[in-house]
Amino acid sequence: MLGAFNNIFKIPELRKRLVFTLGILFLLQVGNRVPIPGIDSALLEELNRNSGGGIFGLINQFTGGAFSQLSVFAMGVMPYITASIVFQLLTLVWPTLEQLSKEGEEGRKKIEQWTRYATVGITFMQSFMLLSSYQYQTLGQGGGNTVAYNPGLFFLLEGALGMTTGTILVMWMGEQITQRGIGNGISIIIFANIVARFPQSVTLMAVLVREGGVAFPIVLVMIAMMVVVIAFIVLLTYGQRRVMIKRGKQIVGRRTAPATTSYLPLRINTAGVIPVIFASSIMIFPSTLLTLVGGLFPESWNLFLQDFINGFLVPGKPIYVCCEFLLILFFAYFYTAITFNPKDIAENLQKHGVAIPGYKHGAKTEEYLNTILTRITLAGAIMLAAVAVLPQIFIAWSHVPSQMNDFLGGTSLIIVVGVALDTVNQIENHLRVRNYEGFRAGPMRRPRF
Image 1 (cartoon, rainbow, N blue to C red):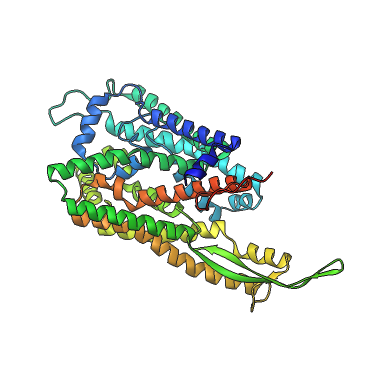
Image 2: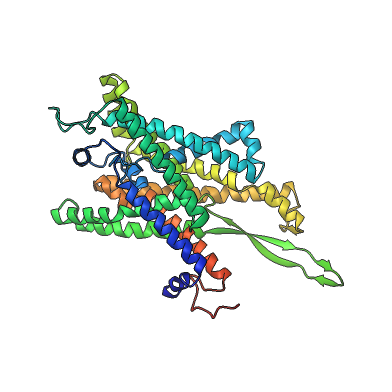
């Protein structure tokens, strides 16, 4: 392991990519702590402390705490994820987008450009409505100072513009990491924001144990469950269903190449962490929408909707768990259908003279691959959804404070472990191309040049 880390810094290109990625993540954490102009940060911190974790804990995980601080990066990449979900769904029903998606790289760039434009609009609308709900908040019922020093239209426009600019900058950072750094930029940013809150969660847990708020045996069970969750995530990431394929004899010049047998690997969890991110984004939408536009409703309606959301649509509640479970299943199938096309695989096998034993080229091979993919995707999606919701059920049953979701939450662990494994795989690919051993190899061999 130490040898593999040393090898990273022996390759100039890989070293530059790693340093560039760490530099971007450092700037991200700095931006997470820069509040928008006109905010009373001390009052806002006191309000957040009195309100507890609440439903916005998941948003705070994805933004590294920037959301609760109303920083310039408060919206993070969530509007971009929302826009991506919308355009991927529209690709299935809008002929123009469907045609663009089939035009290769140029079509993909056009759809990404429209996604960015939609992200700007979504971010400005969400930040404007968020600040509208925050600007007049005070401590207690007796009035006093408000969160905004000078509430009003100018404050809303200035703050919304600052948050929109911050989201555009975060989105640009993600693209730069993808192009010039290591790993998928958006996933790396979410990963960094979640990990940045782990020390705070560990400190909180230690305080709760010392003050008697959480029993020490419960903490041991939480740590054991976290280890089991990580093991299942690794299993999901590397689990495969290998399909036997055979290549017939080939005549090359005067020589006859013998028939060969190999395997086509199909991942159990083709979609990775995307279903969890998409499902979490949708599940927090009702509470986010109520916070943003709740002031437009009559007070009786607003109280009713708040009671409904706090009673049913909170992590750990039965309806929330069931809905998130079903959404993860849906997005696992949806994203797998987008990224893996059995028809294309069958055509490529036929072009290269490769066949699946017992199945003819074309429709029969496609049908067989589609059957296998449907079955393994169901198994992988159920395991992924179970890993995401079981820690929520445990936290709700043991009455552990909701802030522990940062530490034990299945959603956060799935994202952290999944992104970490994907990044390690990319680093290993760089090492192996240059004849260096990776993280899972034995002693380093002498490089060949």
